[in-house]
Length: 321
Image (tube, rainbow, N blue to C red; front, top):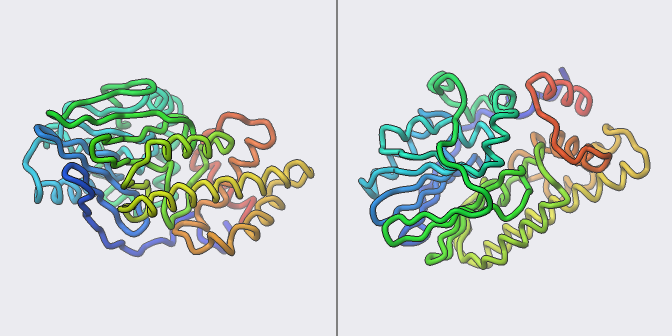
């Protein structure tokens, strides 16, 4: 193991939670760069978007929802398959949850790599899995899947679930409230937080962000970072994420074309991006995973390889050892 602590195992500081109302129907649960949860309150039911990492952590979300409504939480929507987003889902059963919804691509990724991802993420981010023993055995399985688009009506409130392209993963789902012009982006968009791209499609991601921008949201809840509450903030979030993804891939692609080995590409890309992005949350955690995936994509691996706890450590030693 290198002298640098692996991934985010040294990240122990508790974050301050904010619960922000964005419209008559939309709320954001955010925590200073930790994974966000979105809440939609319709006429007769509530939807939660991303569950937190454990049922115990989800209880804090539920407590805040119950301060503003007693309607049943009928729907849990998963923006993608990562453990930190989905393993808290069981907490919502007691609150009236009838369906856990995800794209079919996300379901397929859970089948293919859910167990490995779970072990990998818990090893990387101990603080984000508080009371991990409260997670039931097994994985969080969607009970309702869709491809491309699904519309739900919470009473008279239209809620659109959309796949607008690959980016953070191939299964990325956004939740769009057309009446309120509020978008929940999942990890397709981050704000003042480093995009994790270990399962990403770098060449697709910028065009997917253009598809999000085409909805013209007034407000946006990113995967990490504060809720974006003005069109200018939304634009900054979209453009910042696009700039990071594009700069990282351009740097890695240039090194790969020159035949540089992965570690040399990693060091050059860290040097290139740190001045602008080094202050973003989890920059040092994400960059080894991001550069490794970008290097794969630039050298002929169109599909992300599965991260396991063992592969995490091997990668960290190779790049940071």
